[in-house]
Amino acid sequence: MRFTKAHATGNDFVMINDAAGQLHLPAQQAAQLCDRHLGIGADGLIRAVPAHRTEDGRTALTRAELTSTDEAPVWFMDYRNADGTAAEMCGNGVRAFAHFLVAERLAELTEGDSLPVLTRAGLRTVQRVPEGYAVGMGIWSFIDPQMASESASDSLVQARGLTDPRPALSISMGNPHTVVALPDAQTLQQLDLHAAPTVEPVPPQGTNVEFVVPADPLVEGGVGRIQMRVHERGVGETLSCGTGTCAAAAAVRVWVGADAVNTWQVAVPGGEVTVTFASRSDGAEDVTLAGPAVLVYSGELTA
Image (cartoon, rainbow, N blue to C red; front, side):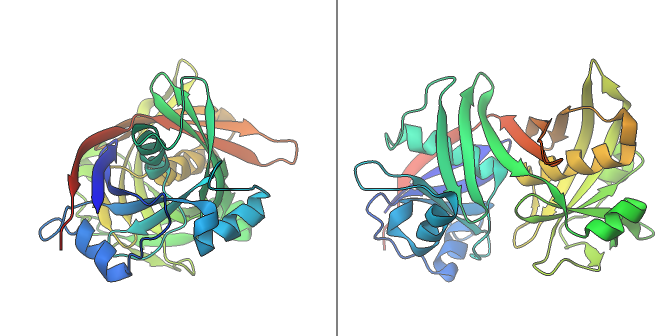
C-alpha cells in the first residue's frame, strides 16, 4: 500500500489513495501508522475514496444531494485522528487532501477553480488560490447558545501552566472546540499541552481546546491578528488545527463585539492561515480558511 506524507502549516497527515474503495483500515492500524515512534508518524490519517464506495461517503452524498460515480467521483475525506478514531473533519486536512488529489491525478484544480469535498461534517468546497487552498468551512455556531449569549463563556478550562481555571467559549465548526483567551505570549508559551486540558462542562463528544493571545494592536489595516496553540482530542498538541483557527477567530470576534473585523490572520506554531467571515441572509456566518499545503514524501508499506 502506497502512502504520502503531507502537512498544512505543520498539521501532518498520512494520505492514502483508495480510488477503488477496497481498503479496510481498522482503528488500531490507523493508530499504528500515525505513531511517531513505531509508525510513519502523523496527527491523523486521511483516506481518499470515492464517496459512493463507502458507507459514510454515501451518507454524506445524500445529505449534500450530490451524485458520485466511478466515471465522475465526488471524493470523500475519510479522516482518522492519531488514535485511530474517526473524526468529522479537519480544516488543514482538507487543504492537504485537495493537494493530494491533484498530485495523484484524481482531480484537476487550477487557480481559481473549485472542487467539492465530502466529509463526515458535510460538504466542503476547496478553491485553488495564490497562497495554496481556500476551504469553505461552513457556518460556525455556539455549542451552548444560551450560555454563550449570556456571558460570552460557557465553560472553565484548566491546563498545566495555568494557576487557575480560565473562562472559555465553545464553538462548533462541524466539530467541537473550546477557546480560551490568555493575556500574553509568555503565558501561552508556558503551557504544557502534553496532557489534555480539563474542560468543565465538557461537550458531549469531547472537545479540542485552543488557547489564544490577541496581537497589540488587535486590528491593523482592517485585519485582526491572534496567536494560538491547540490540544486536539485524540491527538494531543499539534502545530496547527484548521477548524481550531476558525473557532479561535470566531470566539475573539464575539469577545471584541462591535470592533470585530471579518478577516483574521492566525499564527500557529506551524505557520499562518487566514480566516474570513461572511454574513448570510439568515444571520449565520460562513467561514473560509486559506493557507498552504505541502506533500513531504511518498513511500510503500509492506507487511
